[in-house]
Length: 512
Image 1 (cartoon, rainbow, N blue to C red):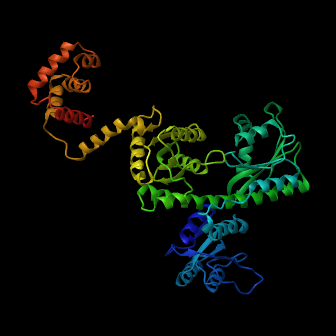
Image 2 (image 1 turned 120 degrees about the horizontal axis):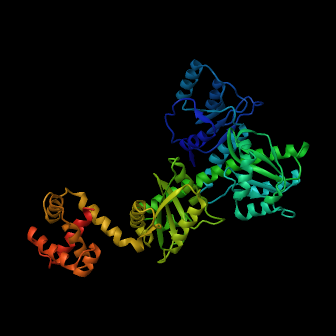
Image 3 (image 1 turned 135 degrees about the vertical axis):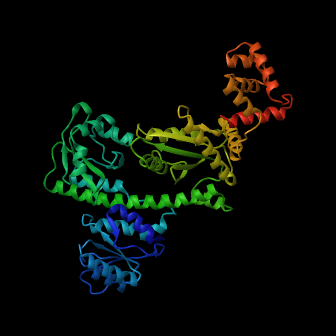
């Protein structure tokens, strides 16, 4: 099931906008109807695609006749008065009008809408996108060359099966799942990526023997004005005639597949995210939710992760979430959600935190070098303990943010630091005392340029060992003995009482 709100949110990325404000977005969509200009009537359905209609009033009339919730129509450029009149009529009949940018073709709109409405209910069962590898083979057979399909970041999405005679650059690209850095820099120098960003015309890339590169013909893959990726064909000279037309047609087919793939992945991410949130918040049906996620009913660790880049406010964490939910290679061990600026991932993991640490390291390596990552790994927990695991991961993350030089913080190793932080937070939750031994010593140090607070801390942390405390302070043991005697004269306490010493340590931690 897909709601109108979901349809609008996804289509907004493809140049589609509501004609007017949408009064309700929770209507469910179960069917799609495509208007046939040769037919005088339209079938009943929830979403109407007004193909060939350039009049808003006509499109709304079709939607009313179809008892539809929403109608999509290409932007007709009507006057403001006409738009208001049509919007009023549509609202009276409960119809939402979505205007499609003129640069977006109906084939692309159909691919997205059909993928959302008709396949949305199957996302939870794990149905994946169409087979791009089969499409790569089909294009390769028509253009008579080896084919690679890549996304906008030069990562391999699919490739044709024929490898005989493949040059080293192609083999490196397939094995590494992305274009190697030297070849990518060569393409940048030759203006290949600039051409793909600005032109729909296929481009011939001349051979480069020093890079192990034969000739290439590349065509951009677009959804409206947005570049989704590219199709590359190995060839020794520019394609012409029928082969060039086949490449153009193949790029259009790839665009539809990538759109459907994006929609499918987006829906699966939504379902996965909601289920992960259920587990992290705590649910009595944890075992059933875990089964829906395809995770074994084992122990888990929660990983909390944030990513930052100097010139990008949200892009880094979105990229990290994309990596976490698309996996590394062909498998994905965990399940993730994005909440605010933090990615939370559930990882099946035993007492050994190494798999969780390796997972974080692998994700960091998959991100661009300019992205900074902070991460916290919670302790091992049962399904019912996941809310506590989430809090532990958040506390470890907060510790890593303040100490970015260290490795991602693991609860197993940093539990004592976390405990002190909890005690510090608890102490700070109430009103800070204006009296007491630590406050009095702090005032005395400020007024007389003494180091009594530091001496007391060293003495407590070394459990009263004068020699160890002196080494910490880099003074003589007699100096520590003298200071402790003066401290006892200034404030009244019983340092033989272990509860007093514990309270003093907590007070010192809270004052840091």
